[in-house]
Image (cartoon, rainbow, N blue to C red; front, side, top):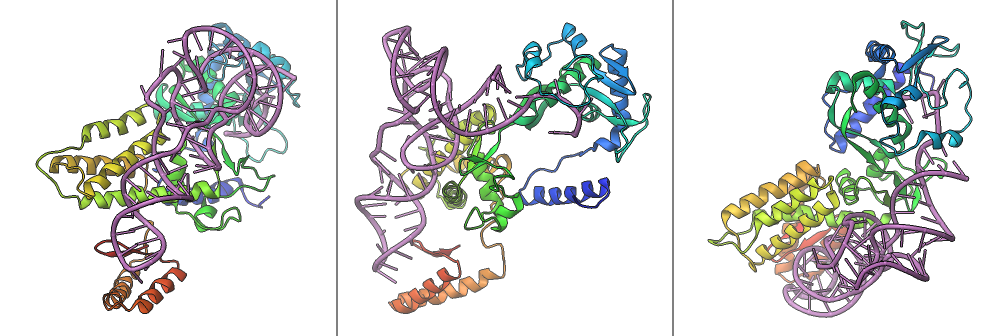
Length: 393
RNA sequence: GGUCUCGUGGCCGAGCGGCUAGGCACCGGUCUGCAAAACCGACUACAGCGGUUCGAAUCCGCUCGAGACCUCCA
């Protein structure tokens, strides 16, 4: 354990997390409240629950009265658990004798001797129970009823279930319209876990610092890879799957610049509306990003046909497709498209090198041109001879 | 032990009663000095065994396998 103050630990890992959010192009939250800065709000919610008759005080601790709650509300509505079935499933835990009923949970816990942080409350010194902070903070900043509450699958029960109970008993309603639970991550078919040693940190995989994979993958590729699975499904990280995602990602991004160069026509044989509608309907169906991506690849195919002049489109269609495709790639999927040649200094150098190679090629000096190509390949740069120009990456 | 979820082609991964996604790999072709890249085409799977149905990857049952959760850590 690191020898630090509690706040020091919070600060350190928070800075780290913010950096991670930036690299992975996650939208920054407008507010990131902390539980310790909202003790008063938590106390107020507990008081509300008590005065509504759904909690009781005992020995300086406050417990939620689940039995009473069940008379008026449906406990287990989210997770589908039945309290009478739960009783014999419950594991034996320490210090539970205070509770009147096994399913009761702490709203406020009296301070113990080894507690590092203690707060004052109407019930004496102590600290808040482990569900109440979410109720207090979400209510304060989002109101008593908001659209979406997210979280990992593992928090569904009891944490989210108890949040609902707290909101219903204090404010009279379920806090969220929709509960979204993200599933777990696997590595090579196994769950990612510390004890199995098959885990990696988000920073490590983009730095190529995990022994699990031979090479580094860009944050964009990781994002794209994860978007290919539905958020409710488990996702398996394997080398083959990541490499496949990388290829597909590059093809998708390439199509944007390809579309840029498409020449337009008076008439359109491209059904832009149908294509664009398919993007929206995929996301409207419970954020089905895998379907969205499949539909984006349908657009890629159409763009290739346009590029080859096999189908036509009007300027209006082209602009519409460009805006929508770009919007879905950049704003919806959150891809950045900046992974290739991030070092600006390299560009003029590569222009020169490829120019020299082109000179050699036009003189049919294959040994020189191949020497340049092989040398670049050894440096990790791939040369791609197109019909009109040579590109690299 | 209990509750729940999942098992899809070489790999990843959607679909969740009929129209049998998508990506990558493989194979065939176009292009190319060669190679690569790019593009086009082909590739028809749903753990097993029963059942329901005109029809099942999709519903039901059982078996096998994987996973999540089961209340004072958030």
